[in-house]
Image (tube, rainbow, N blue to C red; front, side, top):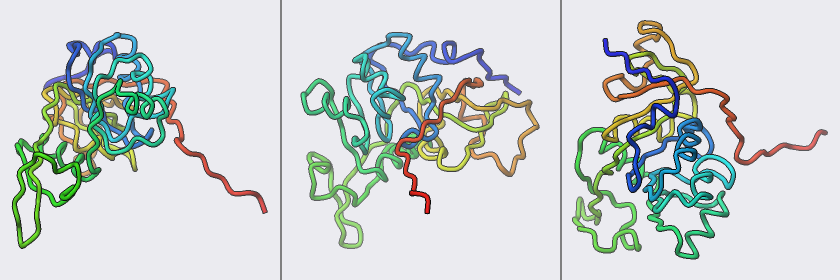
Length: 233
């Protein structure tokens, strides 16, 4: 069995260079690869194209890379919680490709499965469809979307073993699951790294064959994006 462990986030991101395309898992601030993002910030790599559901918030997650102008282009489905993301987009400093959320997920999953392209009705009749091939299926127009082509995919899981088998927890599975194996190299940071055989095979979400590097992260903040509480009675 291949041992895919690396020491830490700094070692995990080795080989990521200026101008590369990265996929980064998570949903909002839930399940984001915090340690890997911090390592990217410290590496000063620049001109990145980042594929992610959103770009975190101003002072956390991908927002940290945006503040240092390390991201050249964002491919996302949501902008709303990051003021700096919005500012850079509106000023023309940042190239942004907004994509319907389901299409974004499917472009990841297609890359994971080795499917080069697919047709979807999402986005037909909008700016999303401009310049794209259109075909009708059962009388309904669909646009052709191509799978992503990323250099690295960086995901975060709850548990993993030395071989790269992963288990996600709750909402943190969002986008991490379809991004695992969707890049040429996939890095997995986990909360708990266990010995091979310790994970129940029936509970594994991603098999180790899709992962090239794995490490145990530390000091996960797990911030809450929007805290809402009700008043006491």
